[in-house]
Amino acid sequence: MNRTISLLIAFCCVALLLGRISKSDDASKPPEVKRGDPITFSVKEYNLKDWQEKTKLGADFWFKIQGNGWYVDWDADRKPFTTIVIHHSATDKDATSGQIEEIQKKNLYTSRYQSAIDPFVKGLPPRSGHVVNGKERFIGYHHLVYHDGRVTTELSPLVKVNDVWHIDHVAWHAGKWDVNCSSVSICLVGDFSEKEPPEKQLFAIAGLLAHYRTINPMVKITGHKNHAKTECPGETWPLWKKKIFVGE
Ligand SMILES: [Zn+2]
Image (cartoon, rainbow, N blue to C red):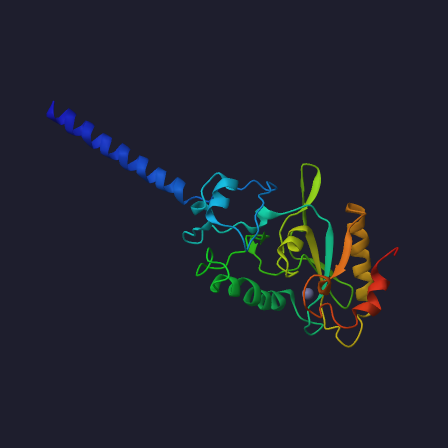
């Protein structure tokens, strides 16, 4: 009898322990974010209550990182695709996507995650949540266009939500969060402060713009300087923008 009781107690202990373990496992899991479920918040103005209301999960779930497990899902704020923003990399024409990414990771993500601008992510390891081919990317451009006419896709540009094309990976590039959430960013590799991009590069970006116009014929095509205090995409922009706005 005694043996049965102690076995029973031991069994209960193990069951309790297992229960606790699986419970704490659940708590350490990231909240399930369904791709394309838009949650509206403004990066600078959000607060815990707002998040709790909108996510129904409690803000703690969104702002804790355990190990390398989870992160703030900035893309949850994705909006319908309305705008294209054109940039130049302000680098050598042969800069690689890795080199551009390194600069942007430092200037955009690392600085945000270290500064008091954002008390929720301050001190946490920077996470973009933009995983492409198994690698987390910190570049702020969906596409790079090179001087020889090569075009690359760096981030996932669009996702269809309820039959409407939304931005998939919200790239950090325009200097305005609302614009980031609704725009595809295209960067011409090179520095166009003094000279215009070569013909092959202009031809390639014109093709890319034509492609996006088939997706949204009303898309607004803009330069970075239309949204922020910057010379990007370079002082020569007025000379070549007419050449690439196909049909305008
Ligand atoms: Zn720019």
